[in-house]
Image 1: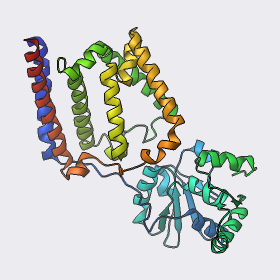
Image 2 (image 1 turned 180 degrees about the horizontal axis):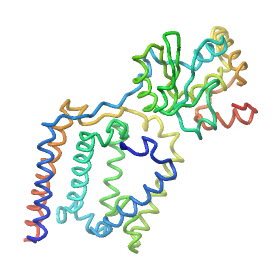
Image 3 (image 1 turned 90 degrees about the horizontal axis):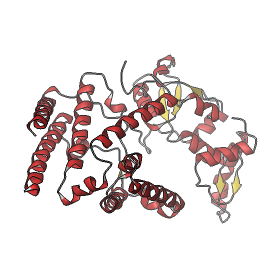
Image 4 (image 1 turned 180 degrees about the vertical axis):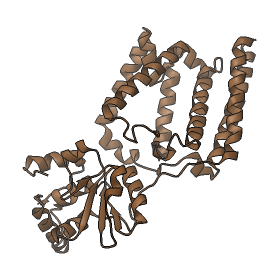
Length: 188
Length: 194
């Protein structure tokens, strides 16, 4: 028993020492960057689609891995790894829209936001694009006002090869929407 | 070279899965050698006759907390890139209750059921089967559970966020709690042996 206890006591002493020093040495921890879903820097899919259609100078940056980029990406998007963001030669006239995994997008936005360009981000960019632009849906019992509001979105959708339709919104997720988009022959 | 290695692109998905497999094998080995593949030993935790589980879990928590803090402090690990599971209060409470009831009844948790099975114990096989059945049932009934599953979200919140103490103070508090728990556990086990 004493042989077992000696290593345990030594380990406890080491833990107490390291734990005791912890409050004294400070921490290098930086809170993880997070995206604000309703923040002013959030770009919506419909908004981005309009800018692209109007051929505005928007740089769309995909921060996901190459496999998922090849699988599907937003129109005009270029893929960059997080450590390649400095290759973006940005000026005050530039607008950049980031999309990808939330944590990566949040860090990238944090890194670029202090620079000269206007840096925006999308929350679930691919999912939102597939749902809002490639597969927009209007309810069968929509009012005239709702149909009037849907008309320009439907036109945007058709511009990008989407299929606006009447029915129930598909909540099965972006993977299913992507397969639906593929089956229609959209080659993004 | 900074950690997390996967986050910094040192290796890709396939290698990370291989590393996870290797870590799992080593983890399972030490669990088995520590006797945690035995349902009687695990269930004894709840009857306060054998508090090995408490000591193993708390040791792991303290080792991880000290490791994360000091590796971060030394600049070896970027702690902000370590994934923190989002908290959903109500679903986690219910899930914890279901897990606890299953643990006491079966004497094994999902990980130790694999350890138990690997050392030839049939109760490990039964529990593993039950776990897989539970996973299937959950997936099949997910549309009914989805609203509750996503309810009461708090985001990626840590004890530091909750109590507004510094990381160092939280680490010290954890260590003190652990040492006190070990001392208490030893006293309880000794009194039970008499």
